[in-house]
Length: 173
Image 1 (cartoon, rainbow, N blue to C red):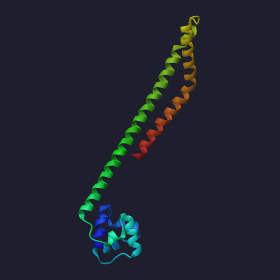
Image 2: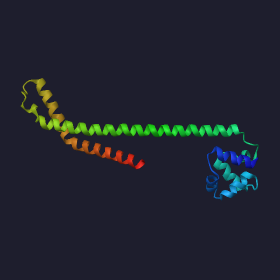
Image 3: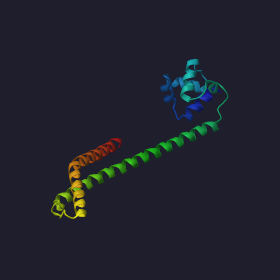
Image 4: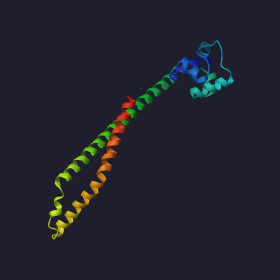
């Protein structure tokens, strides 16, 4: 029973005999002997096996584990693998969207900067005796003043963020 339970739980966890031996600090042949029923683990090793398999020692020593339970564990691990894959794909998609937003913000900053520089502040020659024109002129001047001071920081930040995301993506590949 113990030998069959060790083998079944090891396979359900997706571990090879080498993997299990490495995790327990024994050689592969020891695990093989346990699974063939040629030897049994001592009490401390049974406790470590139960921790690795996330089960009770009594379950290891008890009746045979039904293959159905092992299949259910395998199905759960497959579902977890699919979920992890989907989450990684979603994270990569968000990263790509963020990259494009940063690139578009960088381009928009440059375009607005060029547009303001080429316009030459035409609102300065407006007739400010009309209150509506005066308000609009002050708004235009305020926008230009703030933008011209913030544009270099916006451009540098978006450019640095874009480069960082591109380099991070290349490192993963």
